[in-house]
Length: 401
Image 1: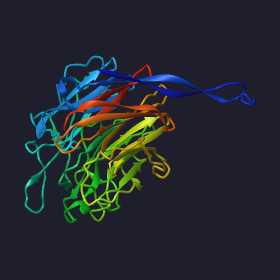
Image 2: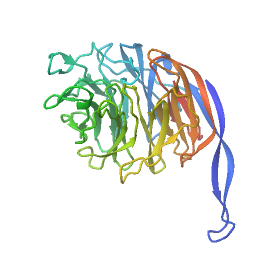
Image 3: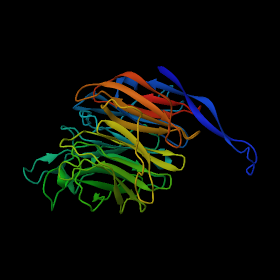
Image 4: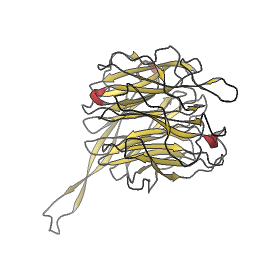
């Protein structure tokens, strides 16, 4: 366990509202950032903290091409964890290879746990068959816990109208019993093959994840989708649904797009957030967090990681804030905000590549997304993994990797 202490800024208003003495005085305080290894040496941690501050974690373990997903939880901010519970019914049906195809976690009504993940080559059930050769493709697998989180239902495939799953999918839920699973793929009918034909799809459940309607395209605009890049879903406190994904327009415009829905995923609006022209697949992922009353998004462009506050009326991210300085090899940003002071921690992987690990870097920001204090680094990030964060009741943060 490694600990850094960094300075942050707290604003205090003094004097009467109409007085010239009503000024803001900056007082230094400390934010502790503690690094914790994933239990049992797992990879690809996904963390959600519920409204009771219980920390729910999903991680991968086993052979990267065909391993397992495990669920654990902590009631003491990561000091101790429950016994791991395997999520996938079939051993070896999850995948870590490529870093962006792993499991995703959401917590819904009554703190039920929902998990979605890309099926491995050995996973059953399979996804829909490729129309040309007729061979089955990878499945977007899903399971949910029982009410106590002590076991998971049999895994099932959610893909009915799309095929060719590649980049990682995502899952989100709200407190009204709605569960959303998204991925990008090609339509089974009426489109050419390749990245230009790919699009984001969303499958929706209105009964706490018990049943799902067949997936629908999230957006009518044809931007393509970067085949081996992950996308990310997020439900805001006001139940607005957001989706970040990377396009593949003309196979070279690898731009980040933001979609939003105010009708529980039935329709979406969208806009381009950040441009990147690249004749390759960069294998990227993205993140969201709630910071006070705002939603903040994070993504990668050209080897740098960025974050920015979402304008819900557009929807758009008017200002992209880069992590201070750049090594040119930054990937997999993850955001966490502490509800106590609305401080933000941006965590990312640095120096990683195919089948190669690297290090974890972090930077603290204030609620206005201004960098505060100094960044830190933790060595020893394993291959095929990334880091994520959680908040502590004392105002600090935990980085899991």
